[in-house]
Structure formats: C-alpha cells, structure tokens
Length: 467
Image (cartoon, rainbow, N blue to C red; front, side):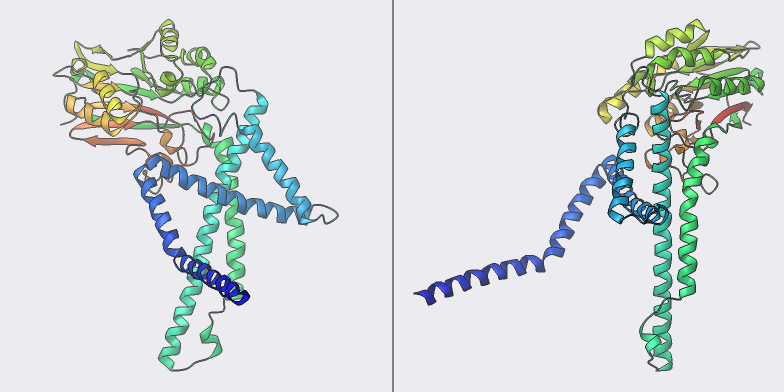
C-alpha cells in the first residue's frame, strides 16, 4: 500500500516536472509572442508607442544615473558610509524632487492653473527638466559608446578568426578576443567625458538657448502678387507662451527687435499663454507695443482654445488695436491694389473625423479671394490644414505650434527634431502644389524650458513677384 502511494506521488511529481520543462522549453516563444503583441498594439497607436519608448528610456536612464550618483557619493562623503546609507540619501533627494515637481511637470499635462507659478515651483521645474533632458541624452550617448566598444571587440574577434584560418595556426590569443586595455581605458574616459556634455548642454539651453532670438529673413515669391506689394515686408511672431520662462521683459525685448525691423505688417500666430490663463492681460500688454503701418493681426492657438480664453484674450487684443482673425478675412490695401489676409482659430475634435470637419468648417471657400494673393494665419501646420489651404488656392500659410522641436540637429537636417515625431512640417519653408507654408519656431517654450539647435525665431518675409 505504501509502495503504491509512493509510486503515485512519483508519477504526479514527474508529470509536474514534465509540464514545467515544457513551459520552460517554450518560454522564449511565449515571450516573443507577448513582445510582438505589445509591439503590434503600440505601432497601431503611434502616440502610445512614442510614450512607451520614452518611458522605458527614462526609467533605464534613471536607474543607470542613480547608481552612478551612489558610486560618487560613496567616494565623496566623509567617513566612508555604507552603500545602503548613500542609496537612501540619494533616493530620498530624488523622490523629493519628483514629488515637488509633480504638479508643475509630470502631472500637469495641459492643465491650466491661475496664479500657480511661484518661485519654488519655477525652480523645481527648471531643475527637473535640466535633469530630465541631460540624463536622457547622456544615457543615449552611453549606449552609443557601449555599442562602439562591443563592435570593436567583435571586429577584433573576426579579424583574429580570419587570420587563424588563413595562417592555419591556432593560438590562445586567436581563440579569445581579449580587449586592448588601452582601448578600453580610452573608451571609458571618452564615455565619461561625453556623458557629461548633455548636462552642460541642457544647462546652456536653459540659461541661454531659450532666450537667444534669431532673426530669420525669408523671401517669398508669389505669382499673383500685385505690383504695389513688391518688397512688402511682414514680420511674424508665434508661440509667445507667457510664463515663468518667457517673461514680460523678454517679450518686450522681442517686440523692440520686431519694431526695429520696420515691417509693413506684423502677424501673430497663436499660443500667447503657457499654462496660466491669468497671464493673458500681461502678455497682451507686452505685445501692445508692436507697430506697423498696415497694422498688427493675430490668430489664436491651441492654448487659447484649451484654456477657454479665446473670447477674453480677443477682447484684450482689440483694446490694443490688434485684430484677432477668427474665421474671417481682411483686405490689405496698398497703391490701389490689395492682398487678402485670412485668420482662423485652431481646429478642435475628439476624433480625426471631427477634427477634419472642423478644419473644413473654419477654412472655407468664402474666405478666399480670387485674382489676388491669399495669406492665411493658422496656428498648427498640420498636413490636413496645408492640403486644405492648397485646395482652396491659399498662396501662403504662416503657422507655428511646433517650436522647431526645441531640441534639434538642424545643422544636419531640419527634420532631425523632436516635433518631427508627430508633425511633417516642423520649421521653415515648404511648398506643395503651388501653395507655400512657413512654420515659425516661436519665441517661447512649453514642456521643458530648454532650446538646443532650435533658437527662438522672429521671421521677416519679403514678398516678391514670381516670374
């Protein structure tokens, strides 16, 4: 009887072990299927995929750099404290920064709050974003150097394998691709030096880059330009984003620069506040100093629509003789001839179909004049907006919204910027089916208060007749 029970237990145990081994044998296939399923879902939802990649990169970078900080802390702190004690100190400091920054950065999103920004909040946000941008970019550089190091080892291994085969000689050195100590030391030192560069660059982008205004001069050739408008000059400012990192003094400096350019007409293409609707009066007051012979005109951006300040800020601008164009047109007359200036609000919609319908409702045929140049002010340079403008015969669209990505490798290619992950048209001049689009990088910032390779921009257009 006892023997039978023992045999039964052995059989059950054997069955369990067999099932376990089968699961273990197929764990790679199971993992691969799960990864593919997740990848398919994320690719089908581009925004979620981008968020997922950024989140993974951020988590990995924070683990990496916190470990490095703990290493440095063990070395610097007196009395040689234990690693656990240093880890607790670093962890508490890190959690304090995250917790204090949460309302103003991570948890804020597009939540608008009146009078929210005070000095402690502003400092916390600046430190958080300096660390966020610097640590992410530095971690990417560390990965690159790691790949280079492993590629070098692989190349050495392949070379020694090939030499062994050619010479028919087997030696201990040819079996193992022992890394060169001097090469590894050089790569470690270079990696350390280069990984510090993004932190310095992020500091530069915060302290100087976000305020380093560039004047861009762009000649626009238009086939239907009336002769009286030859050489007509238009200045564009966009994405002011009044807030703690685009102050009234800074905006007034941009206003003074614009006035010194002596344009014939000035246009503003939306997003006048950052996250505090209470800044509307101050930003309008700062922009009220703009002067041009043919006037100052504006359209509204997504920050006005999302904060529900469209009517309020329009009234404020009207008091300062700045006309906000809301699904309307205004002929600009000169020497008995005219060009047609159009302005629309930023489109809305919960779905793509709703958003498309709103674009068509706001930008309609009745706004376009035949036989002359039509110039459109529209905040967001979407593909749909540009297509619609081209279909209606709009000659030139002036837009903003993208900030040029704020982080950009524009000196290599203008598409190498963060905004290009979401938008096709991110900065500068584009043309499609005879219609032209110019995307201004703006003078303010949102999100991280840093600009690298995408300087704040004031654009001056000179209109000329295309022959």
